[in-house]
Each structure stands twice: as structure tokens, then as C-alpha cells.
Image (cartoon, rainbow, N blue to C red; front, side):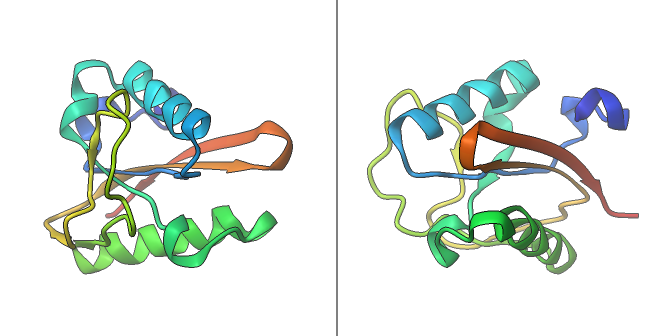
Length: 126
């Protein structure tokens, strides 16, 4: 998604993770973010809204993207609900201690679905 959009890891202000809250899912998503962003992975805040709305089957990506776009517009990232105990290998900057304010102009959204489907897109505010 970064390559196709022309964005660089340095351009990202936030990552909207799918956040399955499963050991394998969260670890694989964390590893993918590290692989895609390199050294920058630790600096980009990560949010996941799935704990707020649950499993939406085919609508998950659309709902998560809508929340991320609204958060970017408002300049407020929602915390990842119920994130209390972290796997030591899931070592990113997960927003979990309350809303985070700032200017979030460029985001990468990761979405996952049944059967191993996964997608990523870059969203930019102009």
C-alpha cells in the first residue's frame, strides 16, 4: 500500500490496525507493521476499533476505515478498548491510555477478513 500510494513510512501519522485480539493475529499484524515501516514502526501510533464494535463480518473494514477517517478529521485518536495486558512481542505504540490528540494527515489502514483475506490502504488528508 505504501509503495502503490507513493507514501513513505516517514509520512505516516497513524496506523489503523485490524486488532483481532488473538495471539497469532496481533503478532502477525505487529510483525507486518515492523516489516513495512522498519525503524519508524515504533514511532507511529496504532489504533484498533474492533474492541468497540466487535466482529462485523464483511463490514469490518468499512466501519474501521470510517472511524479512522473521522478520527483524522477530528484530530483525536480513539484508544484501543480493553488493551490492558500486552504480549511483549507486540511492541508498537498502541493507543490505549485514553484518546490521543494531534494532527493526523496520513494513515495506513489494515483490514482482515475471514479466510485469510487481508488488505491495506493509505489515507491522506488534504
